[in-house]
Image (cartoon, rainbow, N blue to C red; front, side, top):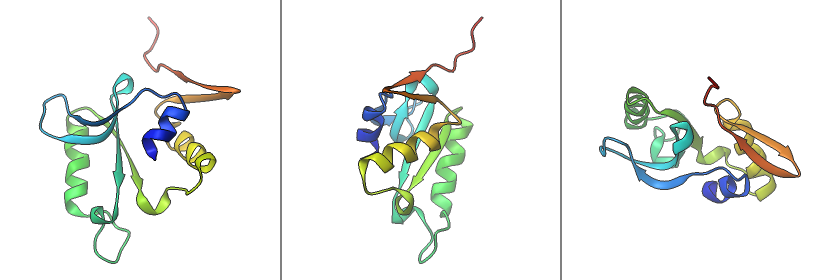
Length: 114
């Protein structure tokens, strides 16, 4: 569902990709932005809580150490309808990439101009 939403928003992404060092597989990679999206299901949280567990925290720290930006999407926060999903994802990613809504969505490269 997250990949479909990214496609609707016209954001280039790759699903289930290895990190550049080939040590870890990530759920979704936005290669133009060196950004990893991890969709965190129930196994990423401590039992009977909504607190991120140790292995998920370690994953995130490793990815950041390897110079990736990491954005986690918790299963309990993902909306059920497509329009809400797109809005949720646009807002979540707004700190990392700009999604402009004017009829058709566009992406803006964050590489600084020389």
